[in-house]
Image 1: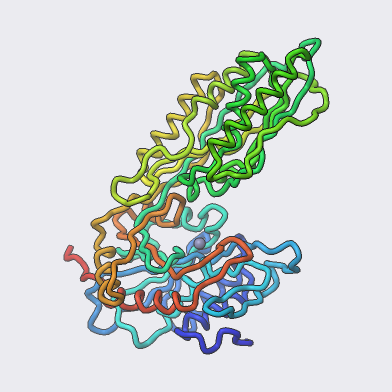
Image 2 (image 1 turned 120 degrees about the vertical axis):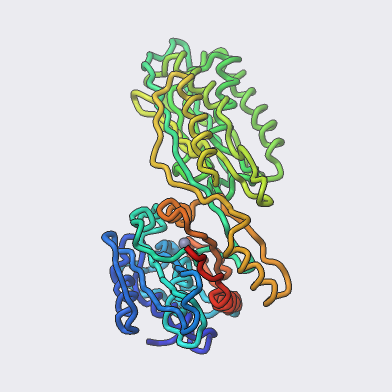
Length: 489
Ligand SMILES: [Zn+2]
């Protein structure tokens, strides 16, 4: 091994991290890295079990005299997001990452680094390998296929773990302890329409909404960004009332978990009203740009030339659709009463597409409170039902409700304060973490998540901070030593 990271401290973490970077491990291709972990368990004579899905658990007995401590599982995921720059030649299934040290950071040339979650996995292996730490009974859980849908965690069975405390090593901010995450559910609406001939004497026009920032529909939902579909719908609704325009086609957004950046619609309008429609859209552009001036300086609503449309949808369906999208709440629904600045519940209008029979709408609801997630998803369902659409829900995954009285949180806060002299930030994330799913399988598990600072995860700019890794390790081993004693049963 070339040992690019030689000399970095703590040595054991960096040794394992460099080895991990040398083993291709994009999501759905984790065989080789899972083998590395299994070989590690065997080599160190640690009990190593694999479940039907391929998740691996390694067990390490307590240090002598600490057998009475509550059993803890350290958890991380084995897969990484394979993203590279356009001009980078890299095969994620066969090539090792080209890592390098850049000041206080470790990065990879032209690709994601996989510090999400390779650094967490490396830390778990380092704890498993160390012979000089003090700890109670430990387990190390390595899950597969987190990044594409948390499938490893979903496949976990009750009974695979013995621990009562789970420390997830997959968050990315030094100084923060995470105690909650959001669950999610999608709600779909299908507006079937009758295609009608274009009224005679009309002309076709295209309306385009562009230049928005978009972003993650959970993490960025409170950032006041414009939703391209909502903005497009607002102008279409106005044009329908004012000028009786007819809708031929509408599309916008591309991912169920993103805020849509662009949307467009093809409409027809009586020729003698076309100038009025154009003026209306120009006016609307001025208004909407003013509303979003601070956050969305690039926003633009404009008309474009369009080929003559073949058909338009019937007026009743058109108005049901536009009314429903107008009435549909979008963005933050409630903020957490327990954690500052945490969005508790939200909904995002994500994607709209048109085919020859129907307009199809994808919306996504999130909440860290399971019952609120159901409630807000039902709200979307109910609204679309009122508008005559066919409505359905997609797969749902559970959230992890923050428990500000969590015993492991108390320990970590105390250890943190005694080591660094200030309080850690207690946070929750308005997006999915495996903790939500694991919590569903193990409802009695006390859980927390923390990790060193990683910037640009899921992009070729990903980097992990060397000094934060040292602090992460210090905190982790101190916490293991201070885990509360097992409750008498
Ligand atoms: Zn991750």
